[in-house]
Length: 130
Image (cartoon, rainbow, N blue to C red; front, side):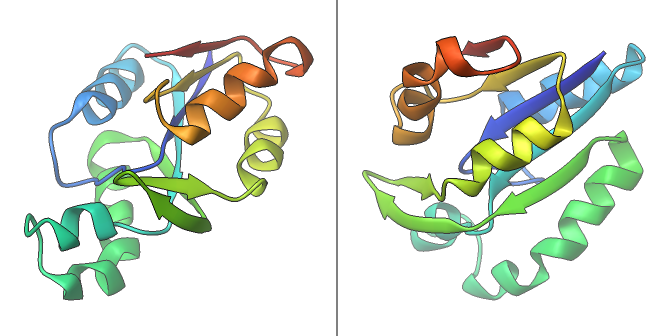
């Protein structure tokens, strides 16, 4: 099964829900792709990580892929709103082109999650939001 996670604040070096779900789904034989913002300002602005880490993000993404087998695709962030990244409309094109068996859209209370919910009937794949 091809599982696509959409997570606007995904950080590959933190053990949050998307990290664990992706890792274990791969262990169970699923193909996992994480579509996330190209910005980690949520993490750097709040002091969790130094700002320099943002330029090294492709390196951390690749390390995550090699270690756990889940690929990460970064989508441009339009802006931040209430500590969440607002992804450009490219997120819908990217997910559609991946042809997921299911999309897991994290943060149903964030704008990206709401936008997916508003398009639910027109999406060519099922999605779950949390």
